[in-house]
Image (cartoon, rainbow, N blue to C red; front, side):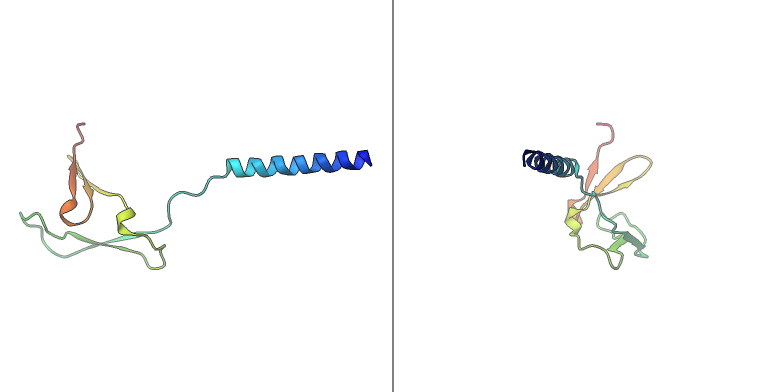
Length: 96
């Protein structure tokens, strides 16, 4: 009887240790498989600061994400610009 109890205890401890290891070492996949489509608006840029240059959209079948959860930036050879909505776009200083 003692031997059965000892084997059962060892088995329970082994399963608990394995389960604990799996819980502690679990890492969820970060990111998404969404694809952003970029289409030219066909408009020529002017000196105005509100020209629409491109239209962004999610590819069909994508996960339901809010645009506000994205971080986009446009990089040129001289500067990087972060993108947000409308007049909220800001310039990032690369020299800092």
